[in-house]
Length: 169
Image 1 (cartoon, one colour):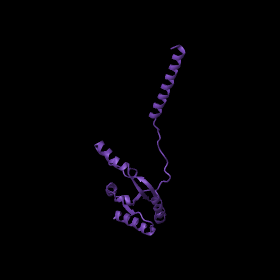
Image 2: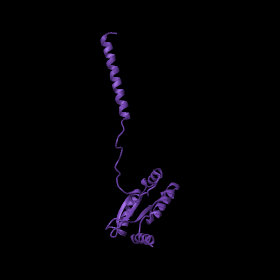
Image 3: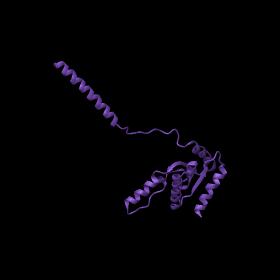
Image 4: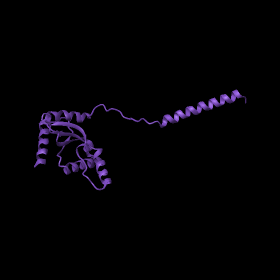
């Protein structure tokens, strides 16, 4: 083998190694921001209900959607940091469908949950029971509305008023 053949073979090996290193590096490269923007904040059912909720209480309340439980409920102080963290974790990944607030100061009046067919599944029932327990513990009225083809704004308004009144009694 002469020097030219050796140099050519070395060049080929170097090129192959270079290509392999690039392939390995690109496989290990992880996108730091693997996110995609949702098309809308609400599902079609939530959007339809939101319009009715605006008609029902929009002039008396601020309506906020998909509010994380941990944004309106906090875990009380505990000596055991692990217990506190577990309690926080249980509320940090859950949200209420809608929160109604007093316009002058955004104090929280009540939470609303729109219940579709998924709420009859065991896991969802457990989640709903947990949210009901949280609301009871912090004295927050929770209004559950079954998903329907159409809603009566007056009936929704009455359910909200009844829940808030009952909670204040």
